[in-house]
Length: 367
Image 1 (cartoon, helix red, strand yellow):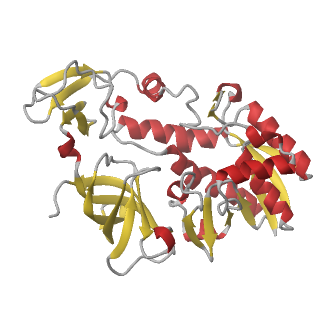
Image 2 (cartoon, rainbow, N blue to C red; image 1 turned 180 degrees about the horizontal axis):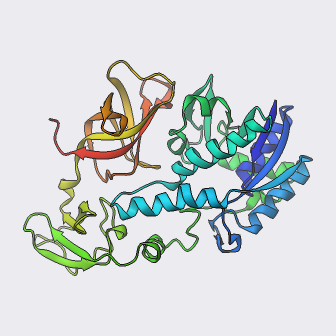
Image 3 (cartoon, rainbow, N blue to C red; image 1 turned 120 degrees about the vertical axis):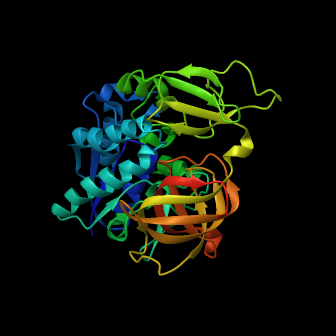
C-alpha cells in the first residue's frame, strides 16, 4: 500500500513510520506546519509543531530512506481547532482540542489530501489499535488514545493505521534506540499543543477579553467573588475560584454550574457534582450503523479517567443525531463540550469503542 506517515517529530510517529516501512509499504513522511509562528509553539516538553519538531521529523525520515514533506495547515488549524476551542470556553464549555484536531485536521483535511494524492492509508503514532475496522484501546493503558480517536467515523478509520498501538511506550523508546532514531529519548509533549506556556486561562483571556461575572454559592445565592470571565472555569474545578474561605462547615467548594449568558459561576459541595445521566450530540457510531436500541457500555468522559458502566441509546436532538446515556454509578466533573466515549464492556478489557458524542447536558437524578 501507499502510506502517508504523519510525523510530528516525536518518537511515537517516527517508530510508526519505521514499522510501516518495515511492513513493506510505500511510505512518504509528512510534517504538519500548524502555526504561522512555529518558533513559539514549544517550551521544553510543552507544545509541538515547532521548527525543531520539523527538523526531528525530517532526520527520522532521512534515516528511514523515505521522502519527506512539510505541509502548511496553519490556517485550517486556527479556524477548526484554536478558534473552536476559544469559542467553546467562551460558551462555558470544556472542549478537548486533540479530539477536534483528529476529527477535522489529521483524519479529515490531511487524510482527504492523502487520498487525493493516491495514498491508501494514513499512519500515525497514536496509541490505539484497529482490528477488522474496529477501534480498540492500546495495549499500553497509560498511553491509550482511543478516547481522542473515538470521534472518527467508519470511513475515516478504514483509511487509518496505528502501527504502535500493540506495544508499551518503554518498548517503543527501546525500539527507536535500536533503529538509531535520534528522537528515542525526546520528552513527550503534554498539555495543549498550541499553549506551550501551559497557562490556558491567560491564553483564553487574551482572546476573549474581560467578561466579568459573579461566583455564587449554590445553597445561599450569595456572591462570594467576582471573576473576569467564565472561560477561567470548568465543572468540578476546586482551585483558582477566587474565594478566600471554604464553606461554613469547612468543606471545599467546587464549580457546579456555569452560565455564559449571565456570567454566573455557581459553586457548591462535592455531592452536587454527581451526575446520573448524560445527553450528547454529534453522535458517531463507530461501526457506521446506529444501534436500534439501548447499548450496554462503559462510558468515559475524560481522556484519562471518568469511567462508569452505563446504558446508551440513540436519540434525535434539535441539532441532529445524539445519544442519551444513563449511568449505573455516578460520575463527577462532567462538563458540556467534553466527549462521552462508549466502550463495549464484554470485549477484552472493555476495549472496543462503540461510539462517541459531545456532551450537551447532564442530569443529577435517574429520572
